[in-house]
Length: 378
Figure 1 (cartoon, rainbow, N blue to C red):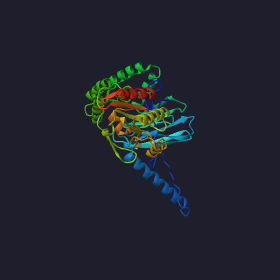
Figure 2: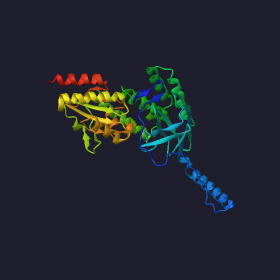
Figure 3: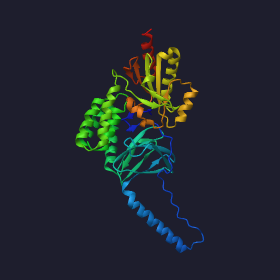
């Protein structure tokens, strides 16, 4: 299991589960019981009328509903989570699993992408279309083999994922390019560009931009796609050799954090989460480095926990001194896309002028990089 990147070999796109829940979770609970004093005929009539009313209501609004349903073997009870990277829903929802079965509904006005986050932190996209139902089947212990049917886009994604299972990572990217050129208007294409060329430890923004340009040409009226293309162009500013982009966010105590917080001789932006063991090592090393070098090392943390309270608890327990942003939005945290970060752990190392000198170093290499930069200035 990887913490936070795409796994083209398995078709899983990794992340962290959300903890926020909403009222109403897609499971329908019908109750047509009536008070005992009513006669059987009245009860039957009331029940029939209720069913007719429900049917009419469904007909009037069902065309805008998209439903995800399915069953997993080897997962009797539990829950997983769902979010939408393109605005299908706001925030995150929880999907309970009962006797291996699950269901979820959302109202959408157009196509939308939903990303399911499973208990092992892997992600799987489901492509929504109003008035349609996507059906998922598989074994919870072998998620790479799951099948998603019900719409053309989901069946396209299933075929691509099954093909990718047999390819090496470079071959997967080549296959994705071919897919995008053959299906430039499919939301699957945007997802593949994002997962394989943008939101990875080693992004290829130029390749992504070229593919997005072809997609925009084929679908010129797609405003969301055009906006995403602009966002990818903006991410070029965070590559090695560029300056850290300006940003503004609230930390876990409500204080505003901006690029001005990176005022050290060496500056690090790091992503971490309480559920990511690897990120703990990076945080511990940064804590020790800050003790050794004081204000010469400035750090800003981005925590991808779904509950800010969990982040605050970890910060206070481990005496983490630098500001930490945790808005509970996980991978939808605006600061991530602003800085071009998409992995946990992940990091940006910048010099005193804000110039990016390294990205996404391991905990050991991060420590060596900081020491080299600071000790070289003494």
